Length: 397
Image (cartoon, rainbow, N blue to C red; front, side):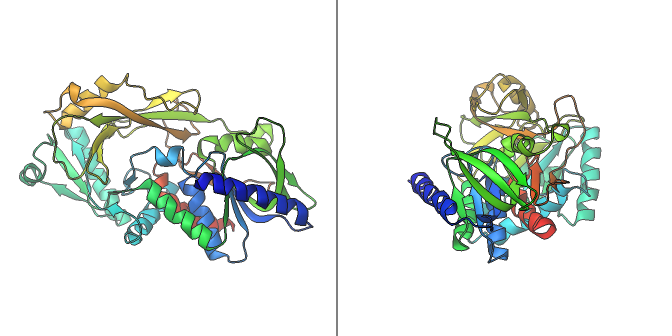
């Protein structure tokens, strides 16, 4: 229902733009992509700048249908990334914000254990603990007796680092909160509206954005103008960027599919998230255990490189591999207790052959004033969403 209503209002909105457009652009700020980050940016601009005319364009029939709604819904502690990275900075700010609105959205500070099974793992955890202290992030080592009393099913042969500020939330509730803030400040969302072209008018110093209704098979399109364009299209951000930037500056999109596995055995009373130590050189945190707000246990995600971002068919080929990883920290786990459940796709801008760390890319593109590119916004994007929004506002708006 909400999708249909917004699409009707979008048609009226664009019709009005065509009638009243003079020298001023239709909107001061247009955001492409209504995932959790795009909604956060739209809400923050609308709230901070009362005179702004903000529009969010979304090709799907509702907001948050892709990466934002297909993840672990973890409120990350901010421990895994380089200290001077945007991922660390914006994750920590976003985490503080999510907990600050805990009276408005469901959020649970359940904590997380990171498990060491050998001396190499333990050394990793000791370095992580030192970094956490420098960042002001609370961590503590858990002794074997305490661990057995609190989580008797969990096996850690070398040590456990506890991250008490890690938690879980509802991605949809967070997006609903941002959407409501956007509406309160008279911002607009155009659902079912796909961007098919972008041009920069040097003389007018504004952008022309060509759009079409996603379900429309005709070539009919609407053109709107905007002072600022913020590319927050997630999986499709490279394609949007490549519409405007010269070929020498094109970005290649890579897609990291993550399959999740549900637990279907007798009830396991595990009260917190359980993560194994990451394997060196692997672009994944391993098969970890998460719980949702209803207490359901799931494992994952794995990492499967795919050629496109259109298929959300779950691939269970790594189920046995996931089982072997889970059995390291839950010895009682049985293979029959796991079943392939759902998947998400992570927007990446480095491929499987590159093992380096890739930070968030958030920049105004040279030669295109007011075009703000957000590329590679994967985990911890949900946690960092308001951190990203405030960074964009402070640095570019």
